[in-house]
Image (cartoon, rainbow, N blue to C red):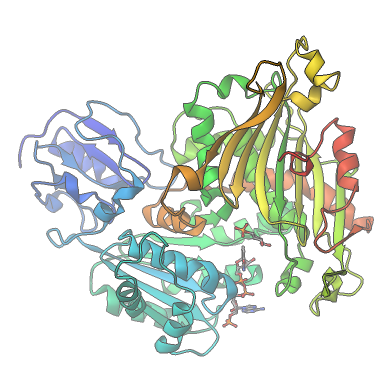
Length: 600
Ligand SMILES: NC(=O)C1=CN([C@@H]2O[C@H](COP(=O)(O)OP(=O)(O)OC[C@H]3O[C@@H](n4cnc5c(N)ncnc54)[C@H](OP(=O)(O)O)[C@@H]3O)[C@@H](O)[C@H]2O)C=CC1
Ligand SMILES: O=C1O[C@H](COP(=O)(O)O)[C@@H](O)[C@H](O)[C@H]1O
């Protein structure tokens, strides 16, 4: 074996850790890592030497041109990834643009296969999001060479029928239509269907047999996506882990929300899942964490000197997290009635954004460092008080000759349901940075528009030098940073400026990073990013169980109180701006909702 260069540890990106070891003995020491091959950027390889004799069969090591050894390493459970960056032998960043380089290869028999099983493949989420995201990854060459996708559900379907169903929702990016039809056909040929019960180990064992046929003796990595109602999670995990998990590669499970209804049920679900899976294998998905602008939040904060110094109670008056949809619960009423908007949107999507917004600077960008900071800030939050919550429910409304239904018009919703379809709440973080700053959340269905945004309202400028222009209402002139998560992604900062001319008139303008104008590329769907991360073993954007516990601790008491006291929601017309109670709540904390002001 060649003499290796100095001990160097490279951190590249979320996909790959590259290590170079100084001696053969350190390679042997590396045996405690499970080393996978699938995401290795091939353009870095020039000479390849298998040193498999040193390692067991599912560990792969490559020799670099300069003698350094590079491996892709997924640390085992509870082990922190190595992140020290030294002697940059290689570029330290591999961007996701380079997925093309990140596919598995046929090197000395070290290739691996990837089997992705969509459990609940006949359902809404699978059709709408999961299969299209998998196709987009395939189109971008982000999936390994040997991958197969299985749809699993009780419905009877042939492979051909699954392919027809899936093909109806596949699209190509507007900016990339080249060979699209051909790519779709190739993708569909990799999709298979297996009809089985979610609680049948025999059925999963048969799926396992099918998988093995396609894996053809390669190292098998298996990803199960639980796209089924939550009461089925544990059965499916039990069967999949007992009879269909990988014998020589990794097995991971993506779990869709809801993760329980409250602290107790969430803890019970975690306990049940952990009978069959280690925490490391569980990928609790919150698709808002995969949205481009939510990803950008940390970049904005931690890579621009101008924001971080202002990021505290000293300069920020309030933060608003706003979600609205211009349609009701149509088709999902049965699920929704058991959960309501607080559990559906606030406890997960909005709280996750809040945590990223408010956390302290993580030690590094590693998943555990980021998740540690998120847990810390969420644990510093006060449980929400009943007084700090307003709930609403949409009622029927007639507009332009069309009658829009009430929430309770849905056949699957009880006529006397008190389930909130709208909620506003004030939350507080009891730490030094955020003491006293209201974090206002607002989420609703059947409102006047569809949007999700973060609004940061800054304090007023002391001294009021421009009193003549602003009068005494200093609040009118405060800066506001808006991060528009969707639609029409943008980050803009409202500033005060002088109107050009000889006079001294002040105006409000936006410094605007408008994504459509700045970037011609289509923004990938959140599910693409998250699926790719799960395949790569990158956990940064998935929820750890202690995060989940902390999140439920904030919401559980108030949810219980709302239900026990049978609090009646304020009714608002379908398509309106929601209950006026939300304004009173904001006013109590001297806040105006930014999305309702005339200048947005
Ligand atoms: N749809 C969405 O937009 C979103 C969904 N989610 C979550 O993703 C998961 C899947 O959502 P979605 O696709 O909408 O769910 P569906 O209600 O469409 O269920 C998915 C599949 O599960 C099977 N299934 C449904 N109900 C039962 C039941 N009572 N017992 C056994 N099997 C059942 C059905 O397949 P079959 O009968 O063929 O077995 C169905 O096609 C859920 O946990 C949901 O909360 C999260 C975010 C958004
Ligand atoms: O998780 C959920 O999210 C969707 C909204 O997601 P978006 O990406 O379209 O904004 C919401 O409609 C659904 O009720 C909820 O369960």
